[in-house]
Image (cartoon, rainbow, N blue to C red; front, side, top):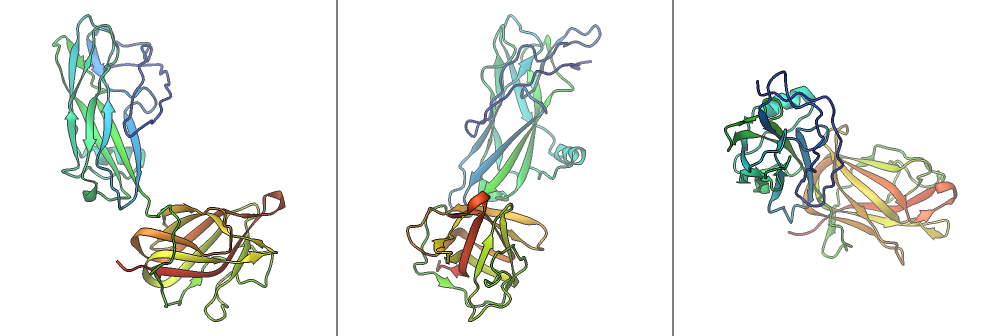
Length: 344
């Protein structure tokens, strides 16, 4: 039976330096490499760390600049070095194993989409005297336009054949699951101006959350606005400030404007903010984050999205501000909040 029995793992720290994944070589990865009297040499797949049959890669991009390709580089290993070179060929596994993987591990990876993957290098060679191949098989992902830009996919690959008839394929370490996590950031990180953008006139919305505020004279719940102008002065002492907006209906916009105010004779401009949307106010999806530079004057903080957003619920999580108080306290001052539409 071509089965690798192992009792001890040596964990290897690996670094994701680029979009390619690399495995380190560890000749002492297993103490025991045989089962009973079976001394057949075997090739197997392992990334050198736990879980040994799993590689994951998070790809961050924006809708205006999709990745051209992403590569998984997968080495192959052998239980003991040989005196000659051998070549090992890999192939895509049964896509239905993705469902089995999800059921076993409580994950929700999607099946690979046809036309988004191929082996641009389907084999790797283990040189004489080595435990691991110096080159790698390469699974290449392309055609991101066909994918869910916020989706998670799992690509199962497996051993296919080995060039030496005296070497067998492992039966229990013959698969590798390559996970892709698309992280599409829809926020323009640069400094944005209103320009020819227009504020959305429909203001029939309110804030669902009421953050802590030192000063009750400032509006913190959005329900008693005067002249359609909403003002907040809220504190982030010991916790982040979070504002949740309910627009009462789905609204499409491609920008946000937050006017700033002076708090106690000093600016309280937004510094960092995370932006989320939701269809039900329970499950939130991160749209992106924005870091605002320290202002030299009071001005609107504007967030511009690469592609329009349609949502009923919007959550802004303010991590800090440029107005810091003692004991780690900070203040957020927003004189007016508006949604923006820019012409196409």
